[in-house]
Structure formats: structure tokens, C-alpha cells
Length: 161
Image (cartoon, rainbow, N blue to C red; front, top):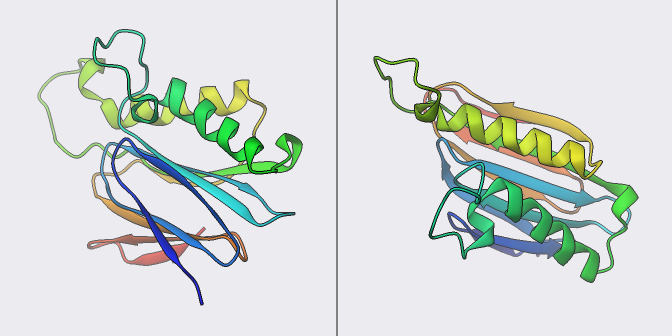
């Protein structure tokens, strides 16, 4: 029987086979799944912002791409994962609201995706699938037994990456 583990905003968790890990309501936030296929262990972090460096309230490391992904990787290594086997799937990073400005600050979804990709590249973790951008929310479910990431949307269907 599969146990479903929920991850909230600015939170993270890890599951092992046959666990399923999910996060709801990804808008501009990004869900990053790290997966070690050999031992069927998956971690999910639901980041809200790209960087902790210019935010005063930055104690919650899972809130930011620059600190949350590294923290999740560290926790997975403690669980016996091998860094060279870890791959990533990412989803989210929508532009949920339309603004009459070209101010880059307002493009939080796009900035979250860019920061996520930069951090994963720095950590030498390949992104093997992604579903990012658009202007709609996503709920994601990752199955640790087979590596499937199911993406559920309103108005854009359900699909697997």
C-alpha cells in the first residue's frame, strides 16, 4: 500500500518506495523533486522565492531555491542516496497574475524557475523533466516506485512527465 506524504508551501520531505509525495497549489512556486532511482528514494521541496540573500525573514531554508534545494540534497544523502545517481524533475513557476509593467521583480514564477535551474546546475544534478511556466496552478504527485511525476491542473488536464 502506498503512503501519500504531503508537502506544504516552503516545506520539504522525503519518501521511499512505495511512498508517494505530493504538493498542492503550485502557482509561482516551484516543486523540485530529487530522485535516486537505485534505492527508490524521492525528496520534494516546495520553494516560494528564488533567493534568501535579500530577505530578512530567511530562517526557513525550504522557502528559497538557493537554500532549499541544497538542504533537500543533504537530507537525501543522510538517507543513503548517492549524489551521482540523483536526478531532478521540476514543475510550477507560473505567472499567476498579469501586470502592466516589465518590472522583473513581478515575474516571480520565471525567477523561481531560473534560480532552480541555476542551483541544480551548480549541484550537477540533471533535470530530466519539467513542466513550468504558463498562467495556471499545478498539483504534483511523485511515485517513488517508478519515478513518475503526475501533474494535475485546472483547465489544462492531467499528464505525466
